[in-house]
Amino acid sequence: QVQLVQSGGGLVQAGGSLRLSCAASGRTFGSYTMGWFRQAPGKEREFVAAISWSGTRSYADSVRGRFTSSRDNAKNTEYLQMNSLKPEDTAVYYCAAGVVSTTQHTQQGKYNYWGQGTQVTVSS
Image (cartoon, rainbow, N blue to C red; front, side):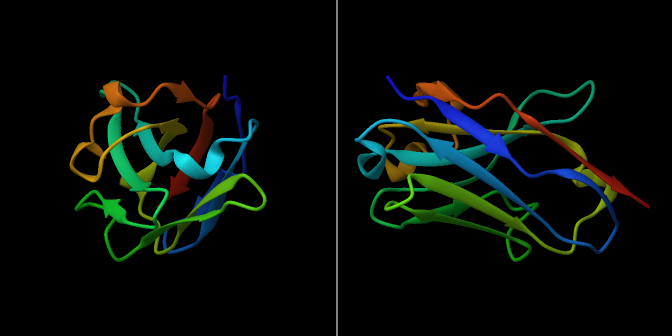
């Protein structure tokens, strides 16, 4: 069993930056793909970014070049650095973990464990 605890998020002006963290329990963190998803009001949850155990990264087109996913296996923690934020990035962000191949990074159904979610609000 893996538990994911998120931190970070909050309110920021357009063009600003935020960093989200996701701390995982369990000794198998290093073997999991870690992902980020978000859900805006009235919309379905969508893929944002993912990083595999080997460091292979995937990004949604809408965030590529602005967001960076990273992980520190020694600390069992995943990060999402968000720069040049836009109002359309406003959403509840969720981290996720699972044994997920690179070609399946965007498929939320492949992730077994989820964080509690954290609100990110970008004002214009």
